[in-house]
Image 1 (tube, rainbow over the protein chains, first blue to last red):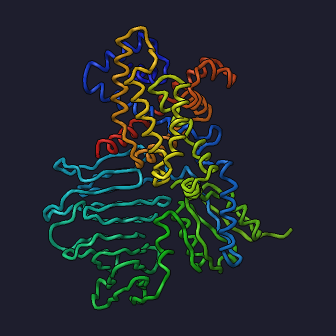
Image 2: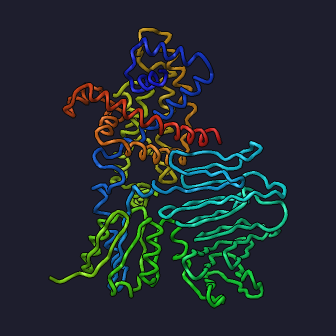
Image 3: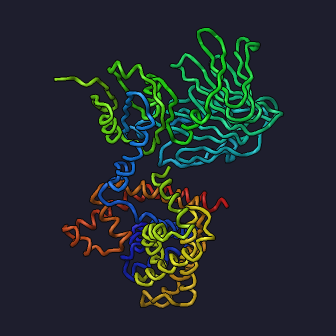
Length: 368
Length: 199
């Protein structure tokens, strides 16, 4: 009843009598007044969105931007060398089909949706974190040694950012699971457990080394920026150091260890249990945290995996020539939609593709 | 995050250097928004239009003081807010109701609403995103009715005529839009809470 009245008033359709009625309600309590002020504020601020397009839903590319996007991809194509082509299918609907799941230390499950902004409270009722649609920020002082671990699962097609209670910033890539303490303990090391890919910006704290555990390796750091990729389907764990210093060791055999310098990459081989290092261009490994896919002479098989995770699709490549190629270039994830990319790529090098639901099949061109 | 970001960033640089074309872009982008905001407080389309023009002129004259792209809207809204407050305080806002006490009460309340607004750039950007998303999720016809009503401040009868539908249909669309947005509204209300009360 009242909310109908408020909306009527705000849209300037209420009669004087109705406005009087509304003001009676507003004056009835401080609580009512507060509520009204917030509503009016929101209403006035929604005048912000006057520029949105009337005919075209936001998920589709707006005609105005189409040309620009098009040139952007044209430019990217110049960068791509080889006869390469890649295909991805960005289906907006799939982004709601899977949700980010946070498993709390006591077993409670929290689901992240756009409609689910919230705060996280511990068992004592104290606020420990704020949740945003694509981010959680933990705060509060480090508590005693009863460290509670949460598990955060990011599905394919999503990425997420996490600020841990020590101030460490973690960007989580699609298809990643991270176990981390809600609040770090006063003593000891800062342990987190990773499956998948994450970029860490570790808050400096020499007294409490930060350790990223994966299945068979651990990476110890003091305060630094680095990427870790430890997807279970890959046969390797790799880490790229941007800044600072980190140490990668085998869990079973801590003597098997390497110390990385900035711009170096350490690669652990599951099979041989060896850790090798090489020099790399770090920006390629950081790009995904900025919403970009970057490839540097990357094999097509790796690229399809990345696309599958990023867009939550399945790619079947039946084009043998394509499978053997390497690619270099970068693509903004937010600006890519399947149609214009595929059409452009087809212009560059003819090929066939078909999209069915979330499956993309790439085939060679058939001559008839 | 924003599709137009690098595009606008370049325009912002040109704007800072005094490029009028770049300024025109921002003028077109924000004019209606400032007008629509102001009309919620001064209840007069023409006055609100004047105010928006003033705000944008003020922006051009003070371009040295705007430090970032997001700063543009914060600047404009802050200007509109203080202008609206001035107009209300100096009794320049026309009486809407026959009941004078009601007019007075409405003004007092509007002053409170305006004072509670902080045009923090983060708040504006985040709100804009959420609102755009919510509105874009409305069914097409409903969205059209809602936009005409909310952002072009048209009366139901005008909308019915423009869209060649019955008055009843317009009302039905509006009810539907509000119902959908109401559920969404509760979310950004929370967001406003944390953004405004947190500082």
